Image (cartoon, rainbow, N blue to C red):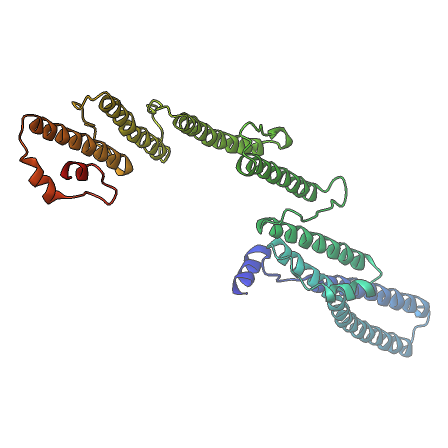
Length: 356
């Protein structure tokens, strides 16, 4: 409230000589001038009529008449001054109210109490009443626009604004903004629905439905969406090749930011598939009784476990070959060792055959 008062003093200035005083002074001035002219005229007429009679009684009559006229002029002038001031205050009360509300409106306040002004407008059938009626309509329209703008700020794009005329630029502009925002929202929702929900990566946005910088916004969204789709399509192609049993080439393109994490993850997966490729080569040689090759690559996770298992099988096959070779020359020293080791699992059918 203090800020409002300070703004009011700095914005509208302090009224030192108000309209009511000016009107009272003007009315009083004209009343006094008119009364003086009337008194002078009346006195001059009386003096002219009685000028033909030269005696002391006529002079006394003129003197008394002059004093009486002067006294009446003073009394009427005083009454006119006070009457004009009272009437001026009564007439300017509504103007002062209107001026105060105009200033509040100029400070951006639209939540004004218009009840008193509506009462004055209903009683006044003159220009002031018409001016108040117009002001009430203006405030109500400004409040409607402010409510609509506040709704937009809260994300409500369903607010309705109806221009009062073809020249209502503010309402027409807000109406156009709401229309463009709805078009923008619908297009953004369409892009998200087509690509995100339906998986339609070939969807082309219709940026023509919006204008100006809104097109740039849609263009930026389409650009970002296109980059995401491109990276997803690259990952899809790689996963498809893996699903077919093929090992794709690693991604060598430089990806910015967090996209590089996606690239590193895909390349790590491709590296892990190297264990399968190398393991397959070792197993093919083992199938041909070639036990000279190991899986030499270092792999993590399940790929490392596969490499370890293949190498263990190859090592055990080598141990079996060595045992067979010693048995072939009559060296049965490994039998005692094999008895101490025993079955490696419940389903072990290899060692028991040797021990029987």
